[in-house]
Structure formats: C-alpha cells, structure tokens
Length: 590
Image 1 (cartoon, rainbow, N blue to C red):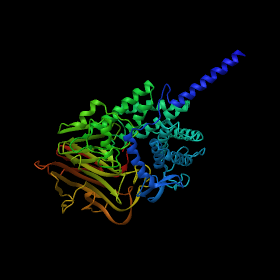
Image 2 (image 1 turned 135 degrees about the vertical axis):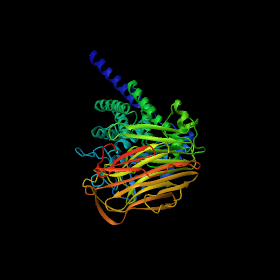
Image 3 (image 1 turned 120 degrees about the vertical axis):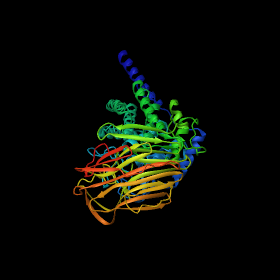
Image 4 (image 1 turned 90 degrees about the vertical axis):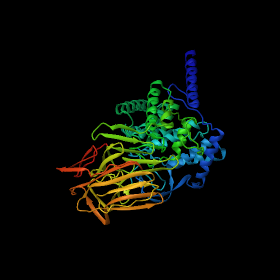
C-alpha cells in the first residue's frame, strides 16, 4: 500500500514538473518567455497594425492583399485575394501589441488560417498551406510552395512561445497539431543544405517543435540537421546562397531566434559561429560611400537597399552605427547584435581595394570580384544564370541618401530569362563578359517552370543595361561601336564585341521611365514566334565594360576574338574569357 502511494506521489510530482517546464518555457535545451513591449515598441507596432486594419475581412477572418503581376506559386496575377502568410503575421502582431480589443480577432485569424493547412494523410502537400484562400492547394495549377511550412511554422512558434498564457485552452491542441504537421512536412521534404535560408529556418522550426512537444523523432532530426548545415557551411567557407541581401538577412533572423531560444551548449556553439558568418558576409560587402551591399548577389529582390537594412544596423549596434540618420523607429521582435570586431566595416573604408571570393568550388566554379573606390563600386560573378533574383553584374555610385546603380539583365517578354547564363572576368574597373543560352533551365524561374522540350514562345528578347534613377545617353550607329557616356561624374563605356542569335540581326535602343533608364540590345522584337533551343546552332553575346571618374582615361580597343568548334575565346586588357557558342545543358549550381 505504501509503495503504491509513493508511486502515485512520484507521478504527480513528475507531471507537475512537466507542466511547469511547458509554462515557463525552460528546459535543458530551450528557453522562451512571454512577449513584453517597451512603450516605443508598442507605439511603432500600433502604426504598423493600423496600416493593416483596413484590409482585414471580418467575414473570412483574413487579411486581403492586391496582386499585381506574376508570382511563381500563384495562378492569379491580379485582383484582391485573402493571404495566408500576411494573415498569420497580422495575428501575431495583434498579440504582441497586447491590446485586449484585438485579442479575439487574432485567435479568429489563427483558427481560420490553421484550418486551411493540408492535413490529409498521403497528400504530397500535407503540413503546408497555399498562398491564398481563393487558391486551395487541391485545385491550384501553379506549384505549391513547401516553404510555407517553414515560414508559417516559425510564426506559429512565436505565438506559442510569446503568448502561451493568452491562448484559449481549446486552441492549444489546434496550434500544437498544426506545428507538428508543419515540422513533419519539413522533415519529410528534408531540403538540401545548399538552400541556405530554408535549411536554417526549417532547422529552427523542427528543433523547437521537437523540444516543446517532446517529439523524439523531431529532436533527433533537427539536431542532426543543424550539424549537417554547420559542416556544409564550414566546408564551403560561407552560405551557398552567397552574398544575398535578402536571404542572408533571413538567415541571421532565424539564427538570432536560435540564439535566443536554444541553450544546449553544443547547438549554441554552432549557432553562434553561423550567426557570425552571416554578419561577416554583410560587413565585408558594405560600401560606405554609397551605403550599398556590393554584388555579386546570389539572390536579391531589389538592386538597392531598403530602409529596413539601415534600421537593422542601427538596432544591432545599439545606435553606435547610424548609417541613415532620422529613420522612423519600426517594431521588430528580433534582437540582433553585430559582432564588435565588424563595426569598422560599416564606419569607414580604405579605398581603392579589390575583394575576391570563391562562392562555389564545384564546377562551374563561381568566383566573385568587387572593386571599390570612394566614388563607385563594381562587382561581378564569374558564372551565374540571369534569373531575376541573380545579380551577377552590379555597379554602384552616388551617396547613402541617393544611391545609383547599373545592372545587366536578359529579358524575355520583359521578364528576366532564367535560361540565359552569364560569364565574366574582372580586373579593377574593367569587365570582359558574355551571355549565352542553356538547355534544361527555366523561363521565369530556375527550376519551377523548366522548359523540358527546349521550346519557348517570345515576342521580345533583349539584353538590358539598366540604370537606376538616370537618363539614357546617345546610342551607337553600329552594333559593335562603344557606348561612352558621362553618368553623374563618372565615365562609363560599354562595347558589344560579339552578337549572334541564329538568323536574327539585333539593334540598340534606349528608354527611360520614372524609375530610371536603360540601354537595350534588342535581339528579337516582333510577332510571337516559337524558338527551339535544341535547333539553334549559335547564341552568344559578348561585351566589355569599364568605369572611372571624370579624369580617368578608360581602356579602349575591341577584344581579340577567336572561335573553334562551338567555343569563343576573347582577350582584352589582360582579361581572358572562354564560353560555348552552342546551347548546352544548364549546370546544376547556376
């Protein structure tokens, strides 16, 4: 009898201990606590949610957004649609705000959005969500975005950890099930460690879900995944999604969450090293005169930095580094800290200097070159695709307040063509470059819309030299004449030394709009025709570029070109480039 009583007492104590761990968010491996905002943070967040309130639909309990253009994962290109991720974020913001009048709205949104998660056994998309209420996963034609398990899972974790005491009891098992399904989807997908931002985010989600809900399988998986990503990054000497203004920030965001919530000593050591790697990437590519993140960029959504970047630097240095004065304070739940030894990169710079890096060791090897001066910066990648997120050729000049840029693009019907490839060699302010086409690549995306037959229809094909906030200059009368122009106080020169695309003869055009100007080499423009990459015998465009201040003499002279058996070799100003002129399969790492 006494033995039974002792056993019962032991079980009660054990259960009570488990409950205490769940409520306080502290265990041997993780920690978390309730969200508490300062007055300044609350005021800033109030302004943010006030901007979203008018788009809230109380009938559908979701936030509306206006679509305007193509997106990889949606069928619609225009209209007002109810968005999943934006609704999740709005609900979390309302809970962070702590205003009782919006608490029920937040949980209404969460319940509605969770109900749209695929929970069907055997479904390929089990555990993820679609983008919009109007495009259910079961019927949408565009491919699903499996990253939604990672992004929405991370948001739901913030709800669980930061607002556990507020969550209605009936909602807790609903959120728990949703988180476990999202984590299981991430585990099943088991993304390659080269997909940097999702590799990190998925590790965070599976690690936290596994430890919060004591799931042995997820614990083991996430611990192993963190080790794999850490070793992969060390072997490469950096993130596979190299020098990305978009995804390096997402990477350090998720790593900052890990730093805050993961306290296991072995895991923490790896996280701290990876976090430093992210900040080192940012620091070493910051150009103080222009206030820009130098190329080449593996992935970027804008060619110039947004104010959120400067706000991040200010916060992460606790006000010690103010790159743009008088920015409006905005709310962020992430707590960043720039390593002190990296401060000088943001505060001063010694110019001119050249920075060379190896981003990819597997052939084709990808090398980056950045040349920096007090007046401008020029950066290129030795190999890259021309996908709209790639930035293999970028020049910056101007000031922190008014930066200017030059970007090279290859457009198919006014959208970046992913099956075009970029080659270059750079020395200081000179670039010898070329573009050709590949088989097996995508049209608008590098993998989602692969052109398996090699055929595509087009009304327009062109190479664009895009200037941000500039006016266009005089164009040459002949295709192979150099374009020489004064842009602000800088000299620039572009010369096309080779241009061949089957039977089509190209020409130069110029144009401009409110955002800037461009020099276009038009390869084809006319009625829609079908091109077959398998039958086109030759496709290659080569150009030189140089830049300098107003007193410099830019190099001149046409490159020396030789062609043999489907290859072109060009030499110019000590630079040498060899590229295929025939259309070959796209290498995996571009």
